Image 1 (tube, rainbow, N blue to C red):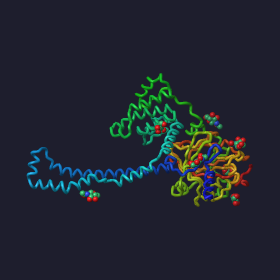
Image 2 (image 1 turned 90 degrees about the vertical axis):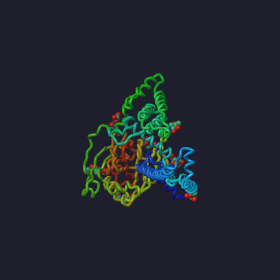
Image 3 (image 1 turned 90 degrees about the horizontal axis):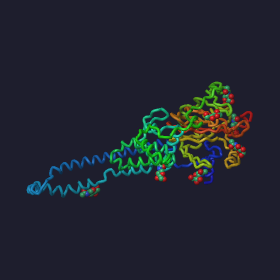
Image 4 (image 1 turned 180 degrees about the horizontal axis):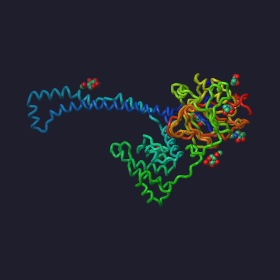
Length: 498
Ligand SMILES: *[C@@H]1O[C@H](CO)[C@@H](O)[C@H](O)[C@H]1NC(C)=O
Ligand SMILES: *[C@@H]1O[C@H](CO)[C@@H](O)[C@H](O)[C@H]1NC(C)=O
Ligand SMILES: *[C@@H]1O[C@H](CO)[C@@H](O)[C@H](O)[C@H]1NC(C)=O
Ligand SMILES: *[C@@H]1O[C@H](CO)[C@@H](O)[C@H](O)[C@H]1NC(C)=O
Ligand SMILES: *[C@@H]1O[C@H](CO)[C@@H](O)[C@H](O)[C@H]1NC(C)=O
Ligand SMILES: *[C@@H]1O[C@H](CO)[C@@H](O)[C@H](O)[C@H]1NC(C)=O
Ligand SMILES: *[C@@H]1O[C@H](CO)[C@@H](O)[C@H](O)[C@H]1NC(C)=O
């Protein structure tokens, strides 16, 4: 019991992404679908199963209807209109006998069939799937992810709704229900201009629910949506401008709202867009020097920054290694919950924790080749998969041992601070998801098979605040990474100039 407990604590504290003192991570088993593409894929599979069950259920209902229809057609041949007809009918013994036999023998059987709960098994199966539906926490994470994508990349709600993301048209769009849900969320977040835009979009696309049945199920009332739009506009503006807001309602969703001009993009936004000016002083070369092995098989190295030392190596993972590091059957993802001290903020990232597969010995060997530092070949690596609009706020990977804390005590015992971070990208990301060194204005785009390496400590072993970095929200794509951190004391005799 004690061992298990200690194991868990160490596991939690050693997780790579657990960075400096202002961030506390907490691994939980609570499975959110939203926190990883892997989880979202599972949810999609559940929906697909539900679609199959519903389809089977309807097939059974249809069969029943078809059978009942045959019965009804047969009965309708005997249907009479008035007293005279009926007298004539039962006066014929053949018909009277038929009537008696039918009502005595057939009727109960058919009624039995009519009442039968055909498809009950399918309903139960559907209920079981329903029990796996995402809860509130999941939905909130999804809202947050969408909010981040809209805000950080400065996307227009109207573009997002029709699948235009950062100038790229996708075969996807948001329905009225989704626009209205985002409107409600933005409203609750006091993002009134955004809320108004989403409400107006909901109204604009409302035609798709003109059907009364849908209205009954979704409960959209156009007047109610108009009211929400106006409340959002007034809360974000002034009652005096209601006539203007009313006019806005009749405009298409692409017409900008009055007084809602965009501000100047922040350095963070520029960084996440990859629009920061490119540094010119850096070079690309093959690295032959760190180990004898490299003289035979040089690695493609790009220098990103000299101080702090940041480099990228290209094509350093094999397809096989990438497959292992992204194959869910090799590990179990946990939700890593990040809490920010002094901030009412929580983030979730899905991680497999620290895992070791024997095939990763080669990866650790390559890290030695790339860094010239000492990596125990059985060192665990961390696998991380990101979910809808996932990001990670700026943080340093160092612990800062000179600042007394539980973590510092533990790290001092274990091997010192995190000297080097080696981040392998095990997937490409289609849109967004850059690693941004926020104090250096350096944007690094994930590229499958690349390794980004940097020193977290300066030459005298102090935390280097310039290595602060963040992960920009992922817009489109499945972001996987594999991370190794090299601890300070292990490199005592390897790193020169310390
Ligand atoms: C970690 O999670 C547990 C259980 O959910 C909770 O009691 C604890 O307060 C959390 N710790 C932090 C630092 O958030
Ligand atoms: C009605 O169906 C039930 C269950 O299938 C069966 O036990 C019962 O005998 C049936 N009754 C008649 C009148 O067919
Ligand atoms: C917004 O807040 C209301 C009232 O607190 C709540 O009922 C609703 O679920 C919230 N909606 C969203 C999308 O956050
Ligand atoms: C980073 O970019 C911002 C905005 O473009 C600028 O104000 C800042 O000086 C830059 N910092 C560095 C270190 O280049
Ligand atoms: C090769 O990489 C090592 C460790 O990153 C570095 O010290 C060395 O300067 C690099 N060699 C060249 C030629 O860039
Ligand atoms: C790496 O470190 C381990 C443990 O400190 C040590 O046993 C090993 O000899 C070192 N290897 C190299 C190549 O320095
Ligand atoms: C590390 O801790 C020391 C002592 O508390 C403090 O002076 C220093 O600013 C800290 N460094 C960082 C990067 O937080």
